[in-house]
Length: 220
Picture 1 (tube, rainbow, N blue to C red):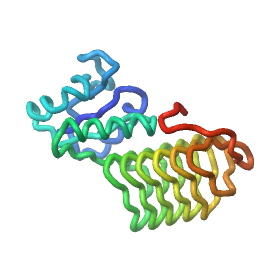
Picture 2 (picture 1 turned 45 degrees about the horizontal axis):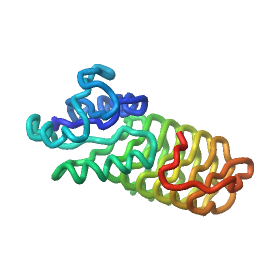
Picture 3 (picture 1 turned 90 degrees about the horizontal axis):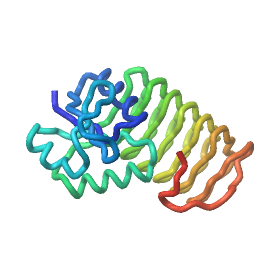
Picture 4 (picture 1 turned 120 degrees about the vertical axis):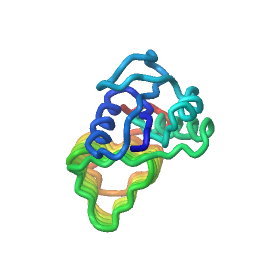
């Protein structure tokens, strides 16, 4: 099997490790993390270095590629851009839990993570480096743009568009045929009945715009 690296060594990395082991398609060589000590381990895999060590690790161990295991959308995007500058031909893999249900003609692009219990219905498109988390439901003909995320238990009706870097939080419900703008956060338990603009925080039943936010603002 091709050898890969997991970038990140916190809680979401545990989930990604479990998925990749169950897929049984790639061999996990180890982890990359800038904030933890080299040699420390997570679920039996050692931290081998930071992103700056990637070129040497790829050459030494014949690494095929890997995946970003970081839950925050903005931080995940920054890591992808950094790795693309540091490496040549690093392949970002897709992690799909065997217990996810993927409908006909669903497209899942590179770097995305689909967790256990997820349902993605027909003709939906999951963009690059997205997360669809535990028991989330994505209706037919939905579009998730790159670096967006759907938290556990969230539900999207059909024909919903989630723009880039946007986060749909725990248990939120979105009716069909609406769009959530880029870099927006929909709060936990929200009921979204209308379009939500870009760079907003919205929550409530029904959901309303609460305040503005900037790209990179913390939400986790």
